[in-house]
Image 1 (cartoon, helix red, strand yellow):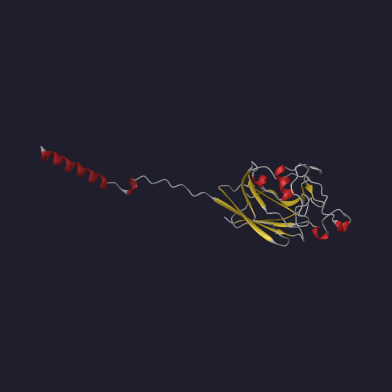
Image 2 (cartoon, helix red, strand yellow):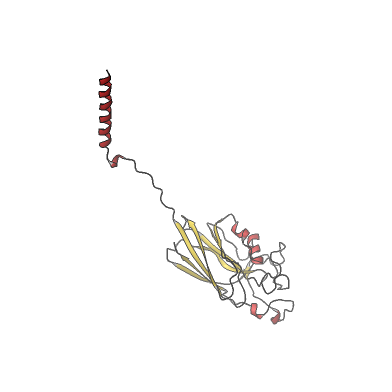
Length: 235
């Protein structure tokens, strides 16, 4: 009886070994490998073309719809804060913003700076950029809802930009109203005392032009364009 059990065990072992040896690699289930996500990266280089108008830290966002501003329409509070004080926190928190990036500090006249921004699996993003001319009441420059869908890896796109007026603070140029080094005054004020619509900026008047209450001089005047912006898709 014991020998019969041993024989049966040996037979089962032999059959099992034969079955396993007869299996090929083709019979094995291949593991599922998830594809790596497509990472899309853009380098945005901004050159300050003004003589004496530092730019606030560059604020770059990718979004799928909407715009940061519309000429002839009121500025959002997010844009108002950036245009009056350079504060980009509310801009980055907008519901249509998917990714945001900022430069580390002030961009001085004549200088250039590059900001990189990346997003996964999306080549249809719109790109917007805004930066305040800090020796103004509420002047800013930038790009508004630029489509990047046709930009392939290695391609670049450039634009020269003018200055916009947020229309949220009167361009009085008075002491205490300009946050830049020409004055060191207040930034954002919630009360609006201007046209309450975004427009092209008419420029600085300055004390040298006869506006004796102004803290600005001829040096703070600016021509159009005020910035050169280049977008390069690097990945």
